[in-house]
Length: 357
Image (cartoon, rainbow, N blue to C red; front, side, top):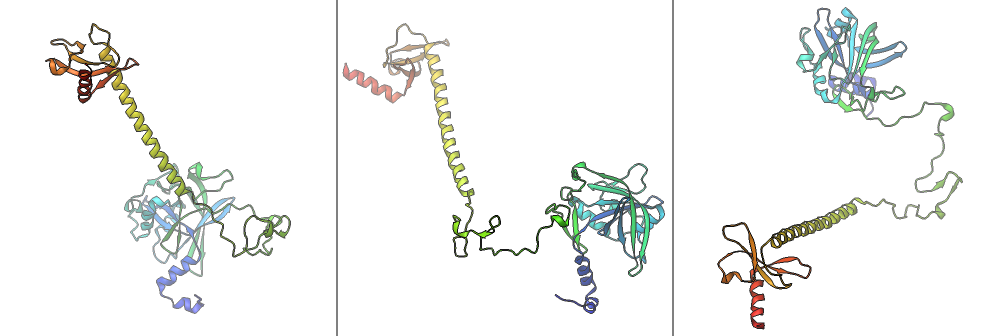
């Protein structure tokens, strides 16, 4: 788009306001807090805060023409004091709606549910939700005659913020403080730091006029020569593309396989542990049972509960031929460990014994 002065003047009013406000780029978003001499607090949204000087420490902001009542301006004229409060993204919407028109008796703190805070001996209110709060006293009120706007300059009286937002060299980390910026009237963005560059000195400046080499040619700065022929990879346009391997899929497969194996082994260990516990409990019962003979390895014995007592005893008499409470059938192996024998195995063993006899 290309527009001349006449074109700009003929634009739709709302369109012109948005374009011209956006042309100046991203601007900080701040809430200015004031209080009338009668004690009525006021809060207004501004995007025109500018640095004036560091010594003395002064900031300024642009106020629109006072042809209509401006509560912020009236309160500063009456009391000299105002606060600048950085807008955090967590209360951006509340901050935005402080710009809605209201009468001087209404408090934007109440209307937008923001916290009104005060510092001892300082007349103007602060915004409790703000991560960076600045208290100022007006020292200059300058009319910009061309537009009727005013530049209000304030000298900083106090600063309140978290130390973690300020680096050792004094840089305020607005990204860490979750500050918000704006283009136009209501297009908000978050603040993101790109890079810290050193102080600009002529002797340290890069050679910006140096001819840049084509992307498809490998030039060795150290030897000041083209070294494509001795490199282990192709450098011309037709060479295979050099791409980094995506290891995420391989890693995921590896993790999945390992987890499957580990889970399987854990289940095996659980089963083996349960079996050992059961074997231990069985052997404790059998070795504590009553019997007047030495069990023979490989033979089957039957465990019974003695009537009207808590005692158990072993016998070679099978449960089918004896009306006793049968607790199980067991066989002693060569390691002197008792193993439970299921009923079908008992019958098969006894059948074999009968045939042999």
